[in-house]
Length: 200
Image: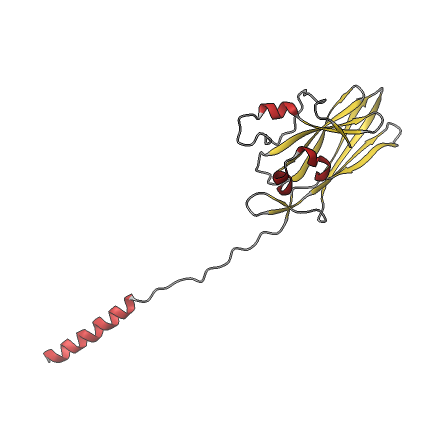
């Protein structure tokens, strides 16, 4: 009787020992890759009094799938943008119509930043003598990011385009980790627009 009880306890102990060796795991599920995103399309129309008349300035931003993709630094891909600027006379005729891409501003963006960034925006700033002055930006496509390179684009009364770096915002950002990156709000304060200007 004692022997039988001992054998029984040995079998139970063996079974319990085997059970403790069992490890239950769940099969890892691979993280789904995010689809290529858009910064966001938009269209604006702004009236402006300039050189003795009233003009309508139309700016349209659209994602362009044919352009190289932008990257937010976290592995998320974005379509770069094309931005069309139209300046319409009071009688409805076109004075200016041109589409811009990031490459048009490449002389003012370093190679690494240019590769991973997108053309974010072109915004009418003001009329100044013979020029319409626009604030432009090339930067991170992530809407939560505040990194971008501030630029100034001027359209003359003859339709010529000049682009320069926004030296005022560059000065304001000195001492930061990246002197080319600032808040993504367009600059509307007076700046030195004549330094390093190029016609396009």
